[in-house]
Amino acid sequence: TAREAAFGDGITLLGYRLASTVLYPGSTLELRVYWRVERALERDYSTFAQLVGQSGVLGQGDLQHRSTAYLPGEVRVDAYTIPVLLHAPPGPCSLITGFYFADGDSWTRLPAGSADHVVLAEIEVAPNAESFASTRPRADRYAGGLRLTGADVDRSVAGQVRLYLHLQREASLYATWAP
Image 1: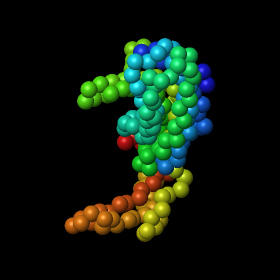
Image 2: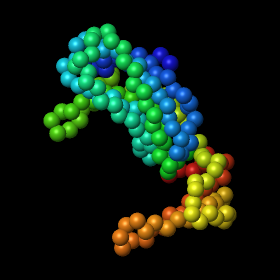
Image 3: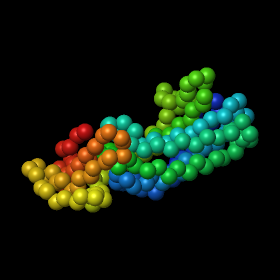
Image 4: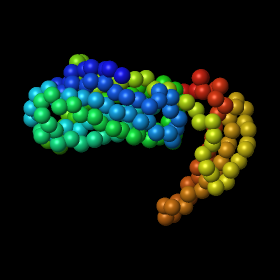
């Protein structure tokens, strides 16, 4: 998909290839981003791709580049395989990309117009049809379409016992659900 955008410091985004625009919690986003070096670069950069929803970043990939060795006019392809967080809530998300570099003890993103990233696509995170694995599967139904599908006990931290309840809602209810 063509998506041309000029970033600061002489880098041009050319486009991307996305395997799917519908994802599920625990699934993998497959993405390729194509970009070109317009002139000799003065520093090394890293690239990023993020899946951003209403509750924040739901998946991210970063790649480091020794870009000072790239030739002007050279086209690069970044391949990302980004797992979507298991607790990602269903709903629309934005897939964004950009470039950043180390600036002293912090990071600086390259500008692309008035922003520090470019939106590549809108992605839909759909609700899982299946519940996740549990050591104590359950099938308890509650009002409003809520189901308890499992319960797990975690004793991996000394002196603590943690209980994880696996809850699921009917898919039709997700349209009105908000985190």
